[in-house]
Image (cartoon, one colour):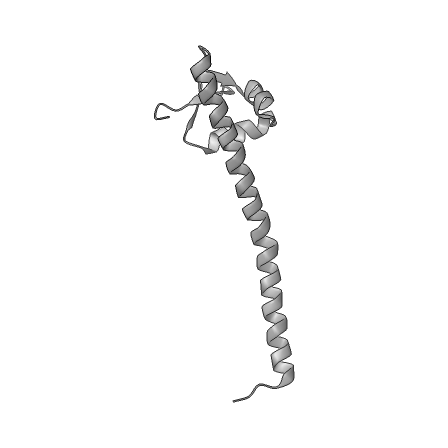
Amino acid sequence: MTLSPQTLINIFIVVGLISALLIILVIPWVTNRHRTQQETEKIYNWLKKSKQTTRYKYRSSISIAINCELSESRVNHLCSQDARFSRAGETGSFWGLSNEH
């Protein structure tokens, strides 16, 4: 069975469109995931160092944001998504390392 030239062109167009769509969706997702991991590690390392060198168990979102060069809302978001961090109180914007870490 042979395919006509027009059928081959249509197949290549569909494959190309699917490939382009995957690239458009996958590259931003991978980039965002990598950035999130880097920023979360930056927060974790800073809180760990802070806990070792100061008497503070919890630090404010503002303090973390300034020292990690992130926005306060980004700090709150990242900390709320990672089990290594625990919030001081129900609604406070103070974060520390969970007991396991």
